[in-house]
Length: 207
Image (cartoon, rainbow, N blue to C red; front, side):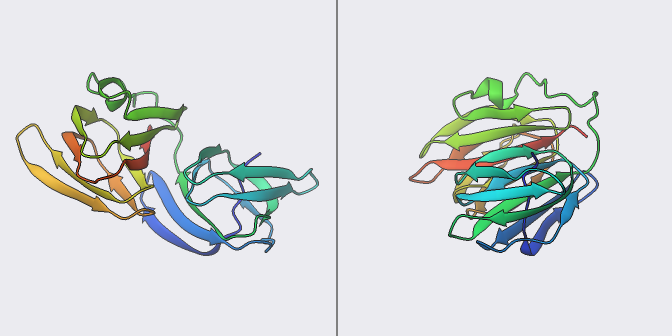
């Protein structure tokens, strides 16, 4: 069952030929209008909650999620959805606009999942996207690694770190929890300057 979204005032954060990224806050116990989703999506839940999704003529499904959960939501027909937990729910949804391209593979020798497997873990991997959860400990350094595909990053915690490219150029990387950024292919070392763990979800596009 596709994850529904009863959005109130959705905010488009990123839109290009590969993806459309929307952040929306769904209020509790407010049933949304019937709607459909024409493309597959990745859903990142920034807050916990419970949602009921009822397809036209179908049986209601219940979806429960914790803050930081990530789910794949296939394209779906007409349905209504309602947050049945008691607090507003904030969701970042990433619409994947194009089919996967078999030529776009994540096979670099410096793939961060290979270089730093304790810090980069695959959540799921399909023909359109690879989704990776990032957890970097306080004041920890990640060795040289390479991102070979365009990607969206959703920040689950604040970020305060540095990125250093092979030529020695260092840039600061600072974001607030809940922010989203777009990244292109790059190769760098990374350091978390925070006193706490840095966490993010990265969606790599194979389209």
